[in-house]
View 1 (cartoon, rainbow, N blue to C red):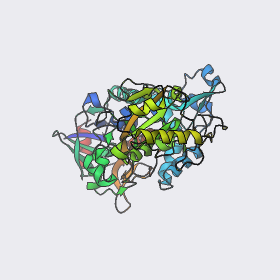
View 2 (view 1 turned 180 degrees about the vertical axis):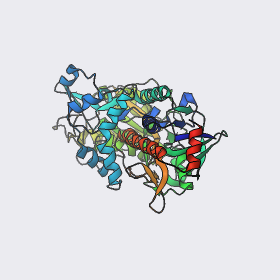
View 3 (view 1 turned 135 degrees about the vertical axis):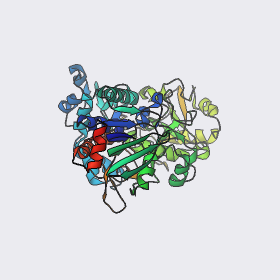
View 4 (view 1 turned 90 degrees about the horizontal axis):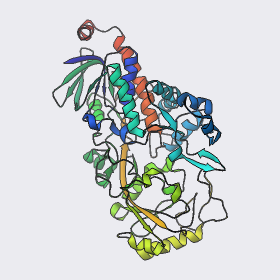
Length: 502
């Protein structure tokens, strides 16, 4: 039995922030990671590294990006994204089901937490490549996102891991926790490899259950076992199951998830060597199914607020596949995820030629759909990708509410997509101090949770960049709280056992 003050299970962004926060408070910390070292980082490593943060203006952003150049400030319209903006958007995305106190904590602590992360070695930068368009000579950021981590999700994980290694936090790879329990006022953890651990405080940061095929079919519904896994293959719900085994209450939208348009030829499980398989800029084009029909309002809102529901939409289509179509109105605006060499991309000089190249598509129906779409575009309204421009269609059963351009400027391109599930919404209930709540509404002593296994925040929809921010905020809070509890007077046997290990 190895004894520590605080043990964190899960080595993604939330778990690393928790471990570093606990260590900062003087706790002796161990982090248990199910994955081998070369696949470490959880879902965080698979992300683009965008963080949603409340800020009042450039001065706040300079706290996160001290090397921001004056020339960048002059050529950019960073605007502001207030705490009210942040809170209201996430509350609305959840259809006002999100826990208001937990959400308020995530929002109000977002700027301070990201500033703290810079001191841990994380380097933030403006998210020019994916969240800014140049309009009237200035870059305009859109959809509530301004900040990303240098190096994306992998850069985030590597920065936090380097700090953890330098801090002396014990990292145990290939260590899958299977059971937790209480004994003598301390948490006992048993792992599949036979290792056993004890700690005064325990923090769960193992993600959701998106890689658990059985749970997906059981909780998300029929057909979800066929979805590709966009994120970590190791997120199978272990932390949720272990917590519920000791009395934690199930909470949140267990039938909901974040799932996106994903390259049809992407691997079945997330691969750190094949990132950028998502295709999230559908709002600049037209999306059709194998019947040659449109099935979503591509321009309903900025993609940040609609993309997480597109995986479910495409999964319902014939064969579970669709095609995103673009012409030269917007192809140059597509980000790197459309330009990676492994993208399933089809190009042609005419729409007729393009339609003929789309395997399994009803060609005549598709051409009819595109003719109707082109005729319905309100061409008198200016196109502006940096705002909700109101350039819509008229008279279609399924409208396009913004950014509607006729497909008429060749060459034309299509990307074949299916469903890629990123993470699940259901999980554990926590309070604003990241403490896990039991079935009677009471705090489970010295048990904390952070990251995607928290079930209080996302219902129905998800706002891009919110996940990493909430994981960092609650992880930091959990680490500090667990360390404080570990330092408090304990029963003599528990304190003696801890002292023997120091």
